[in-house]
Structures are given as structure tokens and as C-alpha cells.
Image (cartoon, rainbow, N blue to C red):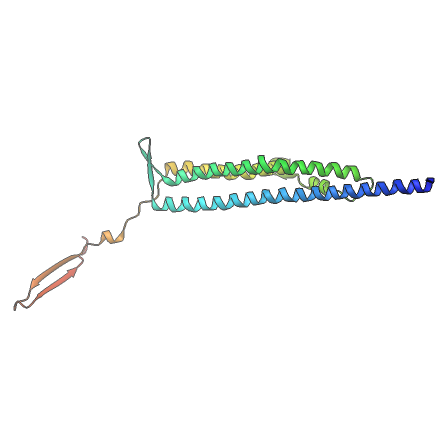
Length: 208
């Protein structure tokens, strides 16, 4: 084999290796999209469940349902708010401690592949570009990444739920009165003079 043929053969091998690396990179990007979609579905499901709990809390508080604990009556809505907090923490666990580490692992793999092929294909740096755009300054937090944003989101909602729970333990729904119970109706009947029936009168006496 001549030097020219040997050189062409090596270039052909390098090209095939580059194609394989690009195919692996594409697969890694698809994996990133997959885990990102899973996280969004978990969060959407959590918001849906939370909405159902909030509706149940409102209905329970409006109905005045109560339970007795430590000799005092408390609104059942407080139990529902506490239950919503527990469910919200479980959703947080599935999101941040289950799927998010898998997403981070695929991101690290994508960064490693991009560095490996950067000399030949410098424009394949999607993972790096997204990673550099992720950190944001939020209130007092500087350069907050995706994990910090998730913690802020989940624990912010959790604090609201716990505040509602403790508030409902000490506040009761306003007592409702049935207007029909306020009606004072009197009826009187007298027999007709010719004994062919009775005459009745119904009146609501005025309150003094």
C-alpha cells in the first residue's frame, strides 16, 4: 500500500470515527430531552394534584367541617393542607432526586463529547451553550442553576401550604345561618258561622 493510499485510509477511518461520535452525541442530546420532558411532566402532574387539593381545601373550609384534637375543634381543611404538603414533598423527591440527577449525568456526557470533537466540529456545542445560559441572578441568589431554581420553586410552594395549614388550625370558617330558620310564621283558623268549613289566615308577625 502506497503512502497516499495509507493516508486516505487513515482519513477514512477518522471520518467514520467522527460520524460515530456525532451519532453518540445526537443520542445523548435525545436522552437530555427525554429526562427534561419527564421532569416537566412530573411538575405538571404535581401542579394538577395541588390544584385538586386547593379546591378540596376551599370546599372543606367553606362547609365548616371540623375535627377534634387536644380538646379543640379544628378545620378539616388544615388536614388537607398538611396532606398537600406531604404530596408536594414526594413530587419534589421524584423530580429533584430521581430524574434531575439523570438529566445532569446526560449533560456531563454531552459536554465531554463536545470537548472531544470540538477541534473538528467547533459548532457542536449545544450542551455547553445551554449550560452557560442556565445560571441566573434571582433576588439575593447569584448564578442560580437548575437545581437551585427547582428548590426555590418547590420550597416556595411548600411554605405557602404550611402557612395555610397552620392558619386553618387557628381560624374557623364564618358560621352560616339559614334564612329560613329566621322566619316566624303564625297561622290561625276559625270555623265558619254556618259550619260549612274553616277560614285560615297565615301571617308573619313583625319583630319588635
